[in-house]
Image 1 (cartoon, one colour):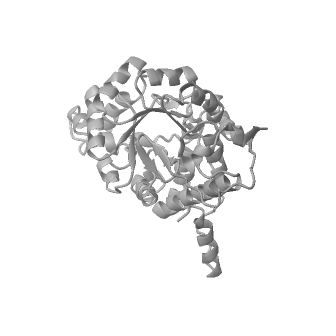
Image 2 (cartoon, rainbow, N blue to C red):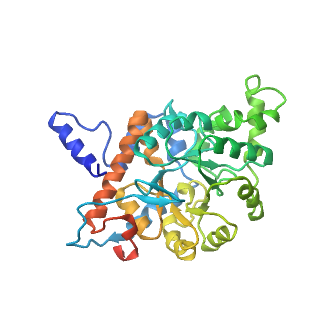
Image 3 (cartoon, rainbow, N blue to C red):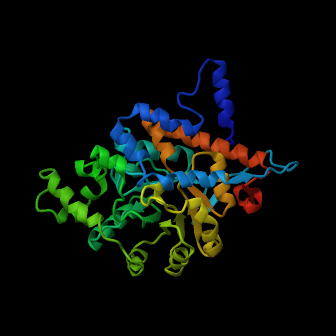
Length: 383
């Protein structure tokens, strides 16, 4: 079944008086989620660093490109399948690692993983998850593991071992969040879920981490949180430390947070398999370069040496089209699926992803292309 068939499914349901329970314009989901959620969890997900300038820049960058449709091409049947790290997926989309999902829905990452598994696309589990590596793996879909890299090699190796044993085949190492940025919305609410024990299921369940504690987590949660905080926050890692990960992870390693071509080249030189061009959705530096602006230069620098992925600002199928045309092999979808999770758990996430893939499928064909691999910058025109 083509992804675009989702629109006909919706129209046929309409004949029976059944309308979609969630918006199909995914840009409207955020406003709906604001009504579903309390202010603290809503702003934790929606908020950005500083004034929000980088978040706005991410969206404005997409508006500076226009798709140039081509006609009379044989595009009635499209194939969105995409090869990443030796494995073929049905579409060039994965669900980005977003932590503490239980603050928007009790099932959190469990629901997200089940929705992704039902569609055959990867979910990238955050180290800051509300459920353990092992619990999320029970969804039995394609799964990657995102590492917030602790400053304790024993804990790091334990996390990698658990991920590998649970079937996570790709390691995504986030580089840009070794400490939290100045986030006024969270500060104004005095709200950091980790200090309340949310988003710590993976480290608090780790046997090596637990061995560092004087008392079990169950007896002294506050002490465990105080042990976690300096281990995972406040100090940056360096290029020479990547060898620890490369020597202890057999699968692909992807560095997330790359914004400069020279850093992408260093990633390739260090034996990494991919990079994610990302500014963390505008959550880490106020006034930073938009990810889409950084993408073409990075793709030109290393696209022939490693896999270039993209996130930050994806809201529509045409956004994905543009990112692919500018050099990304695939994209990571972030906030929109969390808004779907807030509204309907697993069903809400599935609706968001199916809507996005339907729009991508239709946009690809209507623009005159049959596969994502057919796209390059000639499909776009700078505004």
